[in-house]
Each structure stands twice: as C-alpha cells, then as structure tokens.
Length: 197
View (cartoon, rainbow, N blue to C red):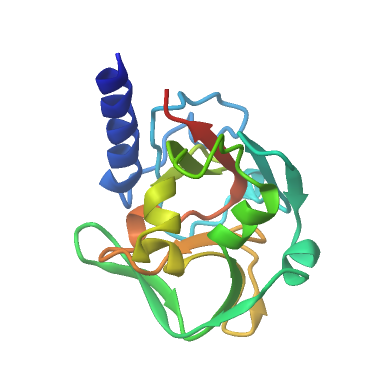
C-alpha cells in the first residue's frame, strides 16, 4: 500500500509539470466549477479573466499555523528581489517574463505556517499551489527544502516595478526549473500542504 501511495504522489507531481498551455473551455471560464484534485487545467498565458482574479492566498492543510496572505502581509515577510526571468513553456517557447520582480520564497511561507512534522526524518509531504481556475503546481517537501529547486520558488507580487494585475495580485514562479512554465501559477488562491500516505 505504501508503494501505491508513493506512485500516486509521483503521478500528482508529474501532472503539475506536464502542461504549460492549454485552451480555455466553457468549464474553465466558470470559476465556480469544481475541479478534481488530480486534474491539472491550464489557460492561455496571461489572459485576463475577471472571475479568476485573486487578492489573497490561503495557506492550509498539514500546517500548525494556517493563515491568509495578502500583498500587504507578503511585503512584511523576507522580500527578495529577483533578476530577469522568462516563463518557458514545456515546448521551449517563452510565453512571458520580467526584467525584475519582488516576492517571498515559498519555503519562507511554509516555515511561517510550520508543517506538521512528527520528527526530524518526517519528510513525506507534498505542496500544491492552486489557482482560481484550477491550475496547480506540485512540489515535494524534499525538492523545496533539501534540493536546489526550493531556492528559486517565489510567490511574487511585483514585476518590473509594477504590481501584478491581470494575473491576480500574486503569482508563483519556479525559477530553478529548466522549463519554468509548467509550474508558473497565475491567480494563486491557495498553498496546500498534504502528507503522503
């Protein structure tokens, strides 16, 4: 049974990185549509969609201190300045980017929330960053906290000295991925921590 759950986790992780760009359909245009937790939906890059705009992010799940992030509360954390980056789709096409940005490391946000670990070697968690349209990016605890990936995963609120608008007030970028598009999340609504069972 442990192996089955591990394979389920690997499948979820791979779903989070398989698609960069898909077309919208009528269900995706309705933000009230319920999406399966294992489904990954996508959208045209940077398409403004009024119903998808987000102004806060819920940090929840297997954490001791769930909380809500707004741009104001994010700015009170350890803000980092990011240099130029591109959002590169799985096909290799650059869809967007910025010359500079400001944001907070996802690991800093998770440390503030305090993941419910039962000991030093309890590392069997995965993190889902979910958008209002159902798109999601998935990370393992190991790749965020032990691997180099975590040093480049940011929740950003500003690009090129301007606040984010069309992509929600906050978006996620995974700068250390070879192809950054699949785990680039606009319209972020939640950061969810789950235990692999």
